[in-house]
Image 1 (spheres, rainbow over the protein chains, first blue to last red):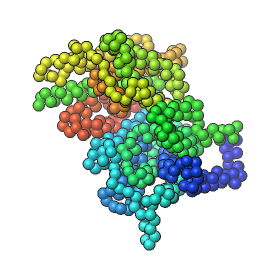
Image 2 (image 1 turned 30 degrees about the vertical axis):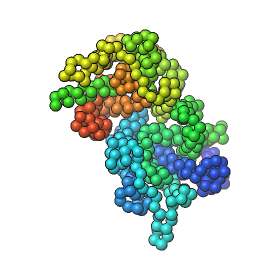
Image 3 (image 1 turned 180 degrees about the horizontal axis):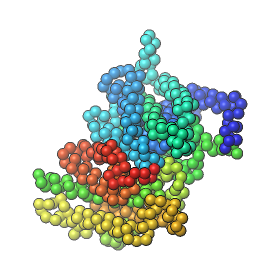
Image 4 (image 1 turned 180 degrees about the vertical axis):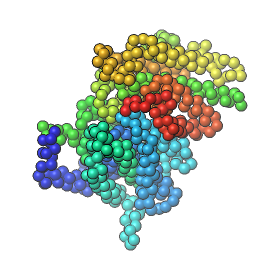
Length: 325
Length: 289
């Protein structure tokens, strides 16, 4: 174990930068190479959005070791927050993004307070149950949220900075807007994980009792980690509403929470970029399968089962293990 | 007015009875194996569909008896095939596995039996009403509640007075010690999983007459069952029983006053309980933590 950590830190600088440069290059060039492989730009946007949501979740799941199976609630709240803001209040896209992020994030903070003392499977169950609240609200409150049909009647507006105005109505332009937001958010997640706070989260993951004896306020850290991860997931949700110009009640449903968790696990939950890889694989597979067969549910379910039974470390986890051993 | 209240109260008790059967099965599996069985609603649907296929051969009563046992047998096979592999691992794996299993089972049911609701032909006795003023109470509903009560009493007696029941209860509190005392924990968990599926299958057969038989009939019952367990207190079967009845009646009474709020009120109860008594109404601190 120590040997692998040493090996990782002693890797030559260029080998550490190479994958990073490759990831960003691939993301920046996606609108150009994706159509050549039969994809489309909106698919790349979906990968970014779900990737961000999964990376936000992974702050909690992979780096704090706490399982939330209800993150769709905060993702959906982000989507509805942005949509409602743009529909009823303002025509500023950025204010919509801000409103959605705050709505989802603060909801997460409040619920976090109630469940932070639960652990393990009990915690997960509470997050599922709480997450469904918003699904039923969006579903029942027809006049305001559009009910089962979802929220329509808003679209992304041009963004103005003083004299400069960016029109993001076009799919490719929106992709780059989303990429900028994604880059800022991912940079923040990276900073958080590198900070003493982030290291403390990993200490809690590795040995909660020991962290407690060292005087670390474990509950407060888990609550903060949960809240921060909700903010990022909500931010991703606002982008999803803008991507589709539509907020869907299914974005609040626990099935989507399950998708987020499988993205994290499939990519590798101990790896920083794992959730993005998992999101890319899952979104592309889902898109392909649902265009091929009406029995897409069976295939998605099988993916879940196969990952759990045969690839529990995820794609990056397996790569890392192979290179280490 | 009195009839309206009575009507909703009976509705609530019946819905609550389904929640109770579902939630007790979930709770059994959760307590002993620390697995949240997302596919529990699909075992319920499976019970209903098996009864649909058996009823023309064995009659309604035979189907009522056999199909829960078949659902339990399928549950045991699936537990041996895959679910036992995630025992003791990070809870994320058990959740993902049963989540995937739920998708496959639901899709398989839709593929095999079709997406449209099916019906089981019931004996005429059960179709009749008790009286003309109480037209909404059919014998079927009385019968259903009686079966649920008998099942719950039977389950609690089984857990209280038999050796296996004692082991299940002991395993809930401290599985390691139970294993150290020489109990075959592997077998115990498999049996326990089957028992949970049996309850789901039974509620599936009963639910066909009430909720209709369709591939996702269990979905609407799953979330209230989770909430019944949390409200009642994780680790306490009596709590689950009480929680299920409570939210069933609360939802039905709200439905009479303000129909749109009937599902939200369940969550209001959940929030209140988590605020005032986080361990649940009858739960003990420190369960599953």
